[in-house]
Image (cartoon, rainbow, N blue to C red; front, side, top):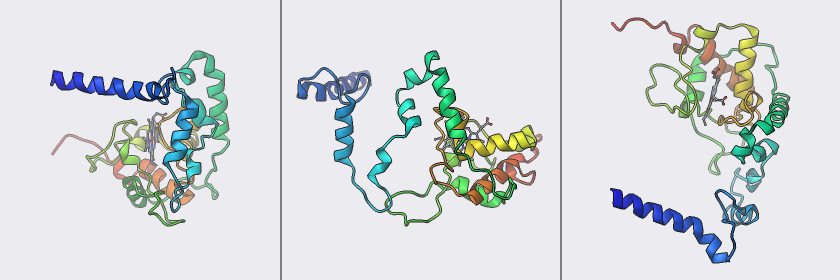
Length: 221
Ligand code: HEC
Protein backbone atom coordinates (compact mmCIF):
# COMPACT_ATOMS: atom_id res chain seq x y z
CA UNK A 1 0.00 0.00 0.00
CA UNK A 2 2.78 2.39 0.98
CA UNK A 3 4.53 1.68 -2.31
CA UNK A 4 1.33 2.30 -4.23
CA UNK A 5 0.85 5.61 -2.45
CA UNK A 6 4.41 6.72 -3.19
CA UNK A 7 3.86 5.75 -6.77
CA UNK A 8 0.64 7.74 -6.96
CA UNK A 9 2.34 10.74 -5.41
CA UNK A 10 5.08 10.52 -8.02
CA UNK A 11 2.54 10.37 -10.83
CA UNK A 12 0.67 13.33 -9.35
CA UNK A 13 3.91 15.31 -9.16
CA UNK A 14 4.67 14.47 -12.79
CA UNK A 15 1.17 15.49 -13.88
CA UNK A 16 1.49 18.77 -12.02
CA UNK A 17 4.89 19.48 -13.49
CA UNK A 18 3.98 18.19 -16.95
CA UNK A 19 2.40 21.20 -18.63
CA UNK A 20 5.02 23.57 -17.25
CA UNK A 21 7.89 21.39 -18.44
CA UNK A 22 6.33 20.84 -21.85
CA UNK A 23 5.92 24.55 -22.43
CA UNK A 24 9.19 25.45 -20.77
CA UNK A 25 7.31 27.85 -18.46
CA UNK A 26 7.35 28.20 -14.70
CA UNK A 27 3.58 28.43 -14.13
CA UNK A 28 1.49 25.24 -14.33
CA UNK A 29 -1.76 25.46 -16.31
CA UNK A 30 -3.83 24.51 -13.27
CA UNK A 31 -3.49 24.28 -9.47
CA UNK A 32 -1.75 26.82 -7.23
CA UNK A 33 0.05 29.55 -9.17
CA UNK A 34 -1.77 28.51 -12.33
CA UNK A 35 -1.39 30.20 -15.67
CA UNK A 36 -5.06 31.15 -16.00
CA UNK A 37 -4.79 32.01 -19.69
CA UNK A 38 -3.54 28.49 -20.50
CA UNK A 39 -6.29 26.99 -18.36
CA UNK A 40 -8.95 29.10 -20.09
CA UNK A 41 -7.63 27.99 -23.50
CA UNK A 42 -7.76 24.34 -22.37
CA UNK A 43 -11.36 24.73 -21.16
CA UNK A 44 -12.44 26.46 -24.36
CA UNK A 45 -10.85 23.70 -26.45
CA UNK A 46 -12.40 20.90 -24.36
CA UNK A 47 -16.09 21.83 -24.36
CA UNK A 48 -18.67 22.64 -27.00
CA UNK A 49 -22.37 23.51 -27.04
CA UNK A 50 -24.58 20.45 -26.93
CA UNK A 51 -28.36 20.61 -26.52
CA UNK A 52 -29.27 22.94 -23.66
CA UNK A 53 -25.73 22.73 -22.22
CA UNK A 54 -23.91 25.72 -23.66
CA UNK A 55 -20.26 26.69 -23.34
CA UNK A 56 -21.28 30.03 -21.82
CA UNK A 57 -21.70 28.11 -18.56
CA UNK A 58 -17.92 28.40 -18.26
CA UNK A 59 -18.13 32.18 -18.05
CA UNK A 60 -17.85 33.09 -14.38
CA UNK A 61 -19.88 35.86 -12.81
CA UNK A 62 -18.29 38.14 -10.21
CA UNK A 63 -19.19 35.82 -7.31
CA UNK A 64 -17.68 32.76 -8.95
CA UNK A 65 -14.53 34.62 -9.99
CA UNK A 66 -14.07 35.96 -6.44
CA UNK A 67 -14.59 32.52 -4.86
CA UNK A 68 -12.29 30.77 -7.34
CA UNK A 69 -9.38 32.09 -5.28
CA UNK A 70 -10.52 30.62 -1.94
CA UNK A 71 -7.56 31.84 0.06
CA UNK A 72 -7.96 35.44 -1.02
CA UNK A 73 -11.77 35.22 -0.68
CA UNK A 74 -11.51 34.02 2.93
CA UNK A 75 -8.87 36.56 3.96
CA UNK A 76 -9.73 39.34 6.44
CA UNK A 77 -8.80 41.88 3.74
CA UNK A 78 -11.68 40.61 1.60
CA UNK A 79 -14.35 40.99 4.32
CA UNK A 80 -15.90 44.05 2.70
CA UNK A 81 -15.94 42.44 -0.74
CA UNK A 82 -17.60 39.32 0.72
CA UNK A 83 -20.33 41.52 2.20
CA UNK A 84 -20.80 43.34 -1.10
CA UNK A 85 -21.09 40.01 -2.93
CA UNK A 86 -23.64 38.72 -0.42
CA UNK A 87 -25.71 41.92 -0.78
CA UNK A 88 -25.59 41.66 -4.59
CA UNK A 89 -26.76 38.03 -4.40
CA UNK A 90 -29.49 38.96 -1.89
CA UNK A 91 -30.74 41.58 -4.35
CA UNK A 92 -31.40 38.80 -6.90
CA UNK A 93 -33.80 36.90 -4.60
CA UNK A 94 -37.37 36.85 -5.90
CA UNK A 95 -39.77 36.38 -2.98
CA UNK A 96 -42.97 34.30 -3.34
CA UNK A 97 -45.26 36.30 -5.64
CA UNK A 98 -48.41 35.58 -3.58
CA UNK A 99 -46.74 36.00 -0.18
CA UNK A 100 -47.18 32.29 0.65
CA UNK A 101 -44.04 30.43 1.74
CA UNK A 102 -45.19 26.82 1.76
CA UNK A 103 -46.32 24.37 -0.93
CA UNK A 104 -46.72 20.60 -0.63
CA UNK A 105 -44.04 18.76 1.33
CA UNK A 106 -44.64 15.52 -0.64
CA UNK A 107 -43.70 17.31 -3.85
CA UNK A 108 -40.78 18.83 -1.96
CA UNK A 109 -39.49 15.38 -1.04
CA UNK A 110 -39.52 14.36 -4.73
CA UNK A 111 -37.65 17.53 -5.74
CA UNK A 112 -35.09 17.04 -2.95
CA UNK A 113 -34.56 13.44 -4.07
CA UNK A 114 -34.02 14.26 -7.74
CA UNK A 115 -30.63 15.28 -9.04
CA UNK A 116 -31.90 15.25 -12.60
CA UNK A 117 -31.61 18.16 -15.00
CA UNK A 118 -29.66 20.74 -16.99
CA UNK A 119 -27.61 18.18 -18.94
CA UNK A 120 -27.39 18.09 -22.72
CA UNK A 121 -29.83 15.15 -22.81
CA UNK A 122 -32.53 17.22 -21.05
CA UNK A 123 -35.12 19.08 -23.10
CA UNK A 124 -35.49 22.85 -22.70
CA UNK A 125 -38.11 23.76 -20.10
CA UNK A 126 -38.09 20.35 -18.38
CA UNK A 127 -38.24 20.79 -14.59
CA UNK A 128 -34.99 20.07 -12.73
CA UNK A 129 -34.45 18.33 -9.42
CA UNK A 130 -33.01 20.14 -6.40
CA UNK A 131 -30.32 17.55 -5.60
CA UNK A 132 -30.68 18.41 -1.91
CA UNK A 133 -29.94 14.91 -0.56
CA UNK A 134 -26.56 15.04 -2.24
CA UNK A 135 -25.46 17.36 0.57
CA UNK A 136 -28.08 17.21 3.33
CA UNK A 137 -29.85 14.76 5.61
CA UNK A 138 -33.54 15.73 5.31
CA UNK A 139 -36.33 13.16 5.92
CA UNK A 140 -35.42 10.47 8.46
CA UNK A 141 -36.54 7.65 6.11
CA UNK A 142 -33.81 8.50 3.57
CA UNK A 143 -30.57 7.01 4.82
CA UNK A 144 -28.53 7.79 1.72
CA UNK A 145 -27.46 11.43 1.91
CA UNK A 146 -24.37 13.58 1.63
CA UNK A 147 -22.84 15.56 4.47
CA UNK A 148 -21.34 18.60 2.72
CA UNK A 149 -24.20 20.63 4.20
CA UNK A 150 -25.68 20.43 7.73
CA UNK A 151 -28.51 18.02 8.59
CA UNK A 152 -31.92 19.59 7.99
CA UNK A 153 -33.74 17.07 10.23
CA UNK A 154 -36.27 18.81 12.52
CA UNK A 155 -35.69 22.04 10.58
CA UNK A 156 -39.06 23.69 11.22
CA UNK A 157 -39.61 22.02 14.58
CA UNK A 158 -36.39 23.55 15.90
CA UNK A 159 -36.69 26.99 14.32
CA UNK A 160 -40.41 27.72 14.30
CA UNK A 161 -42.01 29.48 11.35
CA UNK A 162 -41.79 33.24 11.90
CA UNK A 163 -41.36 35.58 8.95
CA UNK A 164 -37.63 36.08 9.49
CA UNK A 165 -36.90 32.35 9.62
CA UNK A 166 -38.96 31.73 6.47
CA UNK A 167 -37.17 34.56 4.68
CA UNK A 168 -33.74 33.20 5.58
CA UNK A 169 -34.57 29.67 4.38
CA UNK A 170 -36.13 30.99 1.16
CA UNK A 171 -33.08 33.21 0.49
CA UNK A 172 -30.77 30.26 1.17
CA UNK A 173 -32.55 28.02 -1.34
CA UNK A 174 -33.09 30.77 -3.93
CA UNK A 175 -29.55 32.09 -3.75
CA UNK A 176 -27.28 30.45 -1.14
CA UNK A 177 -24.55 33.04 -1.72
CA UNK A 178 -26.82 35.80 -0.40
CA UNK A 179 -25.96 34.60 3.12
CA UNK A 180 -22.48 33.18 2.58
CA UNK A 181 -20.55 34.61 -0.38
CA UNK A 182 -18.64 31.44 -1.20
CA UNK A 183 -21.20 28.86 -0.08
CA UNK A 184 -20.82 25.43 -1.66
CA UNK A 185 -24.59 25.26 -2.08
CA UNK A 186 -25.90 25.85 -5.62
CA UNK A 187 -27.99 28.99 -6.24
CA UNK A 188 -31.14 27.07 -7.19
CA UNK A 189 -33.48 29.98 -7.92
CA UNK A 190 -30.91 32.46 -9.17
CA UNK A 191 -29.46 29.99 -11.67
CA UNK A 192 -32.90 29.01 -12.95
CA UNK A 193 -32.58 25.44 -11.65
CA UNK A 194 -35.78 25.57 -9.58
CA UNK A 195 -39.00 27.53 -10.16
CA UNK A 196 -40.94 29.41 -7.47
CA UNK A 197 -43.51 26.60 -6.98
CA UNK A 198 -40.69 24.06 -6.50
CA UNK A 199 -39.01 26.23 -3.86
CA UNK A 200 -42.35 26.43 -2.02
CA UNK A 201 -42.57 22.63 -2.02
CA UNK A 202 -39.05 22.41 -0.57
CA UNK A 203 -39.95 25.03 2.05
CA UNK A 204 -42.95 22.85 3.03
CA UNK A 205 -40.64 19.85 3.33
CA UNK A 206 -38.56 21.86 5.82
CA UNK A 207 -41.33 23.72 7.71
CA UNK A 208 -44.70 21.92 7.44
CA UNK A 209 -45.46 20.30 10.81
CA UNK A 210 -46.85 17.32 8.82
CA UNK A 211 -43.54 16.84 6.96
CA UNK A 212 -41.49 13.84 8.11
CA UNK A 213 -38.60 16.28 8.61
CA UNK A 214 -40.45 17.59 11.67
CA UNK A 215 -41.81 14.27 12.96
CA UNK A 216 -41.64 13.99 16.72
CA UNK A 217 -38.66 11.95 17.76
CA UNK A 218 -38.95 9.70 20.76
CA UNK A 219 -37.47 6.63 22.30
CA UNK A 220 -37.20 3.73 19.85
CA UNK A 221 -40.17 1.34 20.09
C1 HEC B 1 -23.41 20.90 -3.06
C2 HEC B 1 -23.98 20.80 -1.73
C3 HEC B 1 -25.34 21.36 -1.44
C4 HEC B 1 -26.51 21.15 -2.11
C5 HEC B 1 -26.74 20.37 -3.42
C6 HEC B 1 -27.54 21.78 -1.33
N1 HEC B 1 -27.00 22.36 -0.23
FE1 HEC B 1 -28.01 23.34 1.23
N2 HEC B 1 -26.26 23.81 2.16
C7 HEC B 1 -25.02 23.37 1.77
C8 HEC B 1 -24.03 23.89 2.69
C9 HEC B 1 -22.54 23.62 2.61
C10 HEC B 1 -24.72 24.65 3.67
C11 HEC B 1 -24.16 25.38 4.90
C12 HEC B 1 -23.04 26.32 4.62
C13 HEC B 1 -23.47 27.49 3.81
O1 HEC B 1 -23.45 27.42 2.61
O2 HEC B 1 -23.84 28.50 4.37
C14 HEC B 1 -26.13 24.58 3.29
C15 HEC B 1 -27.14 25.20 4.00
C16 HEC B 1 -28.49 25.02 3.76
C17 HEC B 1 -29.55 25.59 4.56
C18 HEC B 1 -29.38 26.45 5.81
C19 HEC B 1 -29.17 25.54 6.99
C20 HEC B 1 -29.25 26.26 8.31
O3 HEC B 1 -28.38 26.01 9.15
O4 HEC B 1 -30.18 27.03 8.53
C21 HEC B 1 -30.74 25.17 4.00
C22 HEC B 1 -32.14 25.50 4.49
C23 HEC B 1 -30.41 24.37 2.84
N3 HEC B 1 -29.04 24.29 2.73
C24 HEC B 1 -31.34 23.77 2.03
C25 HEC B 1 -31.02 23.09 0.84
C26 HEC B 1 -32.02 22.61 -0.09
C27 HEC B 1 -33.53 22.70 0.09
C28 HEC B 1 -31.34 22.06 -1.14
C29 HEC B 1 -31.89 21.50 -2.43
C30 HEC B 1 -32.55 22.47 -3.29
C31 HEC B 1 -29.91 22.20 -0.84
N4 HEC B 1 -29.77 22.83 0.36
C32 HEC B 1 -28.89 21.76 -1.68
C33 HEC B 1 -24.74 22.57 0.69
C34 HEC B 1 -25.65 22.14 -0.25
